[in-house]
Amino acid sequence: MDKGDSLTVSNNFTYREIADRILDLIRSEIYPPGSQLPKQRDLAETLGVNRVKIREACIALEVMGFIKLKSYRGAYVVDSGLTPLTGPPKVSPLELTEARALFEAESAALAAPIITDEAIFKLRHYVSIMSGAKDEAITPDDADEAFHTTIARSTNNQMIIYVIVSMWKIRKENTELRRVYDSVCKRDSTHREHEHLDILQALEKRDPIAARKAMRAHFTTIIEELLKVSEVKAYQEIQLKASQVRSRFLLSNQIHH
Image (cartoon, rainbow, N blue to C red; front, side, top):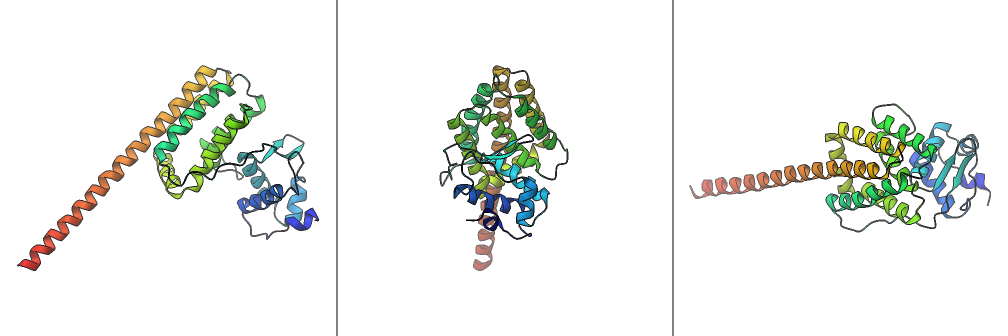
């Protein structure tokens, strides 16, 4: 099969759709593990899209752990041997966050002594985006995910990477989980920036104890916000039920009178 022909897509595709198309080729082993993807300008020409979309698609694929972007050397397909879970059918936001807190705190501690300067550079960039810096290739939410998965990959432990990437997949693909997390992030945007900076500074010092503590503090804040959201939702449900009972009672009085 000709690689150029197999890649042809519409110029109207978003970068995520382009990423999915490239991922299909990786999974079908047109670009097997360890192989190098074509240069971004060549992909852009083949796909009939601009290089910005190709860059965005490659960043998305790196965040998901399918490729590795190497400075001045291009993009390489990762050979992890693991496919992220689709996730259990029912999991609450609190359950997912508790699991993430356990895994990601220890992930940060494990990564701290061995994290590379390149990974630290990426983490600084992701924190700057979460703090308001503009980057057309990645949103603050994408930067949040990339920050956490970069730390996971810095452990060099494929099982840890697998679990953490899978939990992010669950978080994004479950509609209810995504809605609740979006609500929490809007309520807690300032804290999110400071907490990620604390984690970054601990990793820059290669301090596993501080890294674990900073990551735990981050998830403690998320859990507290989730509980507040749950309390508000429960209160609203009680109000709705009370309103329905009141309406039925008033209607019943009108009928009897």
